Length: 133
Image (cartoon, rainbow, N blue to C red; front, side, top):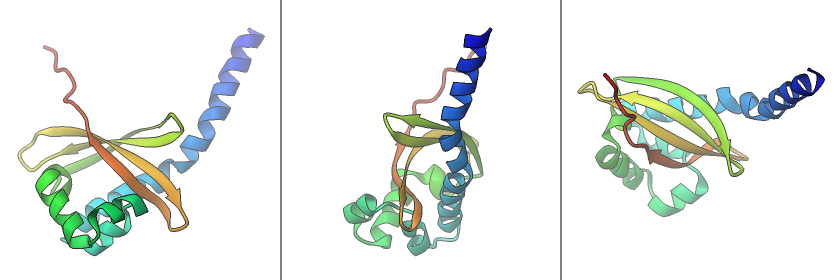
């Protein structure tokens, strides 16, 4: 019993640093999506990491990429935050987006903490989960 309680407490303690970041990370992602909804690419770009900013160079280039490559993020019908996980030292926020046509999409956002706060360092579109009868 004692070992089980120790293991449970250890797991809970180790999860605290990730859980403490959940709200600011989710706010960053939601704020970027809100900026896309009003075509404010400059604000949306401000939530991108220095690496992403270096790749795209300008807010307009970044906005065009999202508009064409991630239309479900550019104009979602609904957004639901899922689990925040640590994988190989990186924090990944799972997000479920329903697009304007009603299709559900799952994305993983890789987050990094910078002097400007939490920023998005990568977004992965995940395969659709298996649907059972």
